[in-house]
Every structure is written in structure tokens, then in C-alpha cells.
Length: 301
Length: 297
Image 1 (cartoon, chains in turn purple, brown):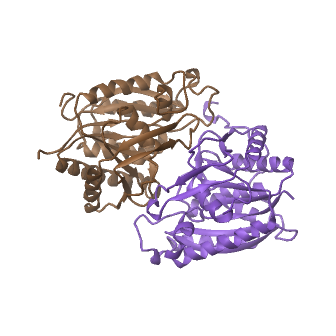
Image 2 (image 1 turned 90 degrees about the vertical axis):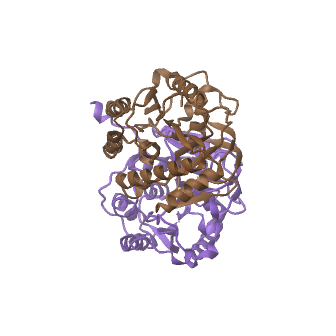
Image 3 (image 1 turned 90 degrees about the horizontal axis):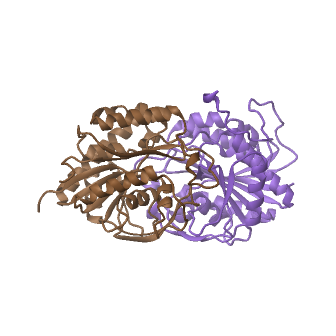
């Protein structure tokens, strides 16, 4: 078993910087704390982060600076404060993952530059889930143009690297559920999910994840994109990645540690642990893909 | 105090490749050459702008993305290192810049008075986005003029192109009023490409120009249509066609930067001076100047 624990966390910085300003943000912080303890108890060798808040264009970028150190300020929530960080990165695993991605047909590269801007979501996740750097980590970007096939193959390449290394991993996806922010400043005490529709979809996703139905939820990704996502990128990809990384099935023990609005978005902390039980495999519309063969170049045919 | 004025507006795209290829001392990576058509276009625009004797550069960047309102740099001095999150192999740039905070606050206040959501950015640890830095460097490499940095509130993504257009028009009018009251002479920079579909691979030598071309012919045709309108001074049509342009050519004008700048200029029915057009990793980029009072104003 190479992935011993996984889950999703919000990437907005409020649970890290100002949890006291809103009861829901404090619940998220408490949820992060509980998930942190479960990760530590699972004794992973590496903590792998896929962040939807780190966009890339040239394929997939994997952080490989052994000790990125900086003071981060969020471009939107700069008034919440600065975030100093110093992380311990498993550069060897980053390079191994990059090579495994190449082997499956993907464009990928490692990143190791002083001052590289690690995104708010990754910083928040690592500060709260791995505060003393006890577990070496790796962070991967989300390509703005990639869709399901590429994302799934990227996740499988991570598993290749993991299995070759013999390491045990915790895998974390940084994402929102519904991602519509209010477009005006609000009193934190008055925070709520942006719409009833967003709330209903978020509850459905949490119900599935709480039942360990990871692949079922991943199969809904295109519908999730249509229903509750502001379309900043081509599709809603993080659950494709998580399912590809942990295993494309529903045999998980799921636990929703916390769910609350952050300025209108659906923010959650959810843990998934592989188990022998679970809701059985089904027949899905989405194809399984093992190798990325690039764009089909349909227009020029 | 005499009235302030906008002496020029410019379409000043921000591909970091252009700074990389120029090899300024602030940037760590070293290039052999590359993207000369665009870089020489910037050189020609610089010469025209330098003749105008302006006080401040006001820049709206698509890469400072603030989904809650429009934000303004509000710290007098920044000194930091900018590493491009997309092309870190090309752009690792140490910058020192001054901000015209009073003018930024004035634009912020004028925009708020018009009903826009605005906010000043006061955190001294903040890293200025690479779009702002690239456009300002290529326009004024000496960095001897203060800047006003304005974010993109991405209302195209959250609402529609039409809402983005309305908000950007209002922000442009607010910018013009604030500059007029300030008594300053300003140059406005819209820091955006035209068509904006990138290749997702990069050649081993990034400046290998044998690999550089537009992503597809559709993008090229759209860019040429836009440049035709610019050269003919059909500025209102240029704005009116934005929803279709954005939808068809995946353009970076979705940031509102071009609309803001043309609105601040009063949607002038004058031809823009097209200094250059070229592609960078498949995207279409034009360097254009508008001079409402002529080039010797």
C-alpha cells in the first residue's frame, strides 16, 4: 500500500491566519488539526500536495528546492498578514516523479529556484498539516490547459514513482468545493455559502466523500464544473488527480473533519483512508487512461 | 496647480521572455537573443514616450488577480525578487520601485465613489506581480518614474465580459479624473497580450526562434482584425468587439486592462501607433501607443 492516507483541504488562508474571526473558519482550523494528527499517525514517508492554486502552462511543475524559504503574502488577502515559511522538500522524490511523468508521455519539470512563489494554498496546507516539517513534502502544479486524461496520467505517474521508491505517502489536494467568492467585502461574522445551489452540491459531495466514494465523486467532476465552479480553468480536476493517486475506486473510509464557508466558497477538510470495505465498483462513463498522447491536433487534420 | 493629463496610453504586454532576452542586470537567467521584433518595438515606443516628459506610469496587470474588488499598490517603496511562477527558468528579477501612493489613493477613492469595490494594498512584504514588473521594465528600464499598480478583479470570470467592460470603463473614467486633479502627467499601460493560447511545451533553448509562431491561424486572424481597428482609429468598435474577441481567441483583454486604458483616454477616435506585433510561446502580442495630444505633447 503506497498511499496510506489522503484528503482534501481548502487553500484559502483564513484558517491559518485569522481563524478567530469566524466560527466556521475556526472549525476548519480544528479540522486541519485533526487531519494533521491522523496524517502523523499514518507515518507517511512523504506528503504529496497537488495544488489547484499553483497554475502552470509548460506541462506540470514539481517543487524540488530542498528548503524553499520565503515570506508569502496572498495577492487578494494581503491584509490578513504575511506568512513566513520554510519547508522540507523531498527533492529526490520530486525528480523521480518528474521522470515517471515523462515515461507516461507528459511534459513535466522540476522547479528549484530561490524565491519561487509557492502558492497560498500549498503554504496554508503545509503550515497546518505539517507544521514542524516532520514529513518531507512535494508540491505539484495544476496545468491550466490539462483536462482529465492528462490529470489522471499525472496522478498515476506519482504512483509509479511512489511504488518504485517503496515510500508510504500522504496525498493532499488543495481545492475548494464551490469556488464562488463574494465580490464585495463582507463582515466575517456574516459569511455564508454564496448560493443555495452551491450549498446543496457541496453537501452532496461531502456525503459521497464521507462515505468513501472517491471515484464516484471524481466521475462527477465535469458536472461539478458546470454546476458550482467559476470557470477559471478548463475543468474541475482535483478529484481526478486524487482518485488517480489513491486508486480509482470507492473503498475508502471517509471522514469530513470540517466544512464551512470562506467568503462564499465551500471550504472543507476531508480525510480518506484506504480500506477493504466500501461501496462497490461501478460502470463509469469516463475512460481510464494510462499514457498521455498529447493533443490530437484535430483542427489541422 | 495646473490640470493633470494622460499624455499617452500603451498596450504593453508582459511576456517575461522579452526581459529574459534583453539580459538586464536585474534578471538572473541569461539568454542569447530572441523575440527581437517585439523588443525593438518596445525600444521605439520608449523613445516616443521619453519625449513626453511624464511623471508617473499607471499600469493594470492581469497577473495581480483580486476577485474581490480592484486593488492598488499602497506602499511607497518595494524592493524584492520576482520569480515568474509559470516561467521561473526565464524570469528571476530583483526589483526596486517607487509607488505614487497619493495618486493610487486618489484613483481608488474616485473609483469607490463611482460604486466600484476597491482596496489599497498596504502590506510591505507583498511581492509585486511579474506582469506589472515586465511591462514597466520594458517601458522604462531605468525605473526612475514612480508607478501606480492596479489589479484585475476578474469580473469576466465571475460575471461576464459585458460586466468586465462596464467595470473597466468606470475604472478608466475614475483614473482619468484622479489624474486630472493630481496635476500630473501620466502614461497608462495596459499590460496584456491579445490572443493568449500558449503552447504547453517549450523548446530546449527557449529563445530558439525557429520554434516561435502563433498557436493557430484563428488566433492570428483575430489579432490582425484587432490591429486593423487600432490602426484605423476605430476605437469604439475595438471595445464593442471585445466580447467576441475574448470568446473566440482566448485573449488576455479579459483582464479589463485594454478597456480600462482606452476608457481613461476617453475612447479616442485616433489611430494607435503599432510598434510591433509578434508571438511569444504561441500568444499574440502587440505593442501600441495612443497619443491623444500628439507625440510631442
